[in-house]
Image 1: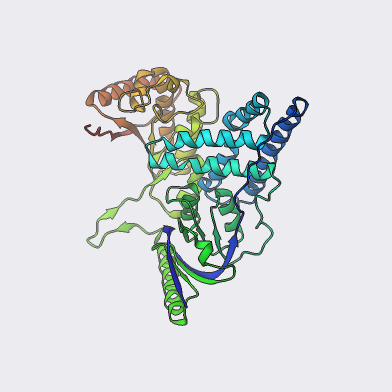
Image 2: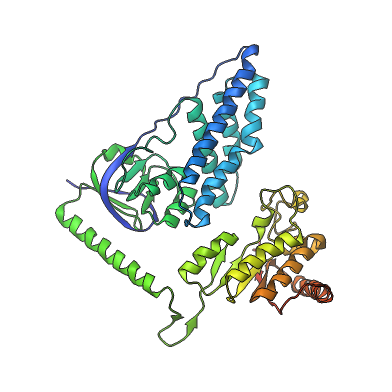
Length: 441
């Protein structure tokens, strides 16, 4: 007899296969006091667990094919960076020493404190980032407790449908390399990094199917519809025939789309549509060229300021912009000026540290740049210099008044004059902006 279950469909596609259950079980966190002479040994044990966790993620990172889009590898890189963060590294060590308690207890205390901060956030996407904290800390905790973090690494999962309480981005990348058919998790939501990664990897996925492992057994044959969030356990012959037909139709449709990607996008009445891609990093250009985009409609520049202690100089910015413009071979590239401040802070921009946390009231994006010409001028000059190599457009983020547009235009003209009198060359640059609409309260 068939059974139907529902969850949240987060990555479309139909998969039919046998279930592989991953049951890691809930971690029992011990708490015990340490003798004074045992404290430093416990700190060393915690430090080794951090290093082991980092090595595990680095091993998974190395398994990602070189032609994989950079945004997929970035999920693993994010967790690696978190392992180096002082909040996860230094604070538990301080607690071990000050409270003379074991590493697991200290790590759990820090996890609870960090999760509480994320739970208070209004933005649902940022609130969901607590999952990343949970994933990274769980990996460290399993290492401390001598539990296997990647227990399915050596198993043959080709064509299997994974069911687990939760999956980390690292789990998802690992399983994709093992050619799983789909996955279902009992927890999680559509904004989690695991859900986003499933869409990027085109793995049919359903999350939030509570108690799925109570109703579905290891080895059961199931069907999942990642678009509808539907799961059919032990389907009959008629249902199997129906979904296999849908699978074939989807594959034909995707194959048809692949043939069209290099053709111009033209409506039935003959109007040409320009399809432009978004880019986060220069490495994204390879994917943009492969999918046949007509150019870049938004190239974000914040990456230049991330994971560094200083502000990038003009030459460093020029090299980044120039490489992108040159790679696009005459196709338009819209470079958005710096969008930092308020809730968007990075290490390499000390100007943001003193800003108000409300972006409508504090300095953010264009307001920050106009307030700090020492930050803005090198970026404008680098963009203008890069424009000598192709069709460059400038986008200004978070414009809220006409005066901001006028002031920016004046600054661009000043920078143009300086460029013209020096060695740098530039072409005329198109100019546009993202408008900010403040809601009334």
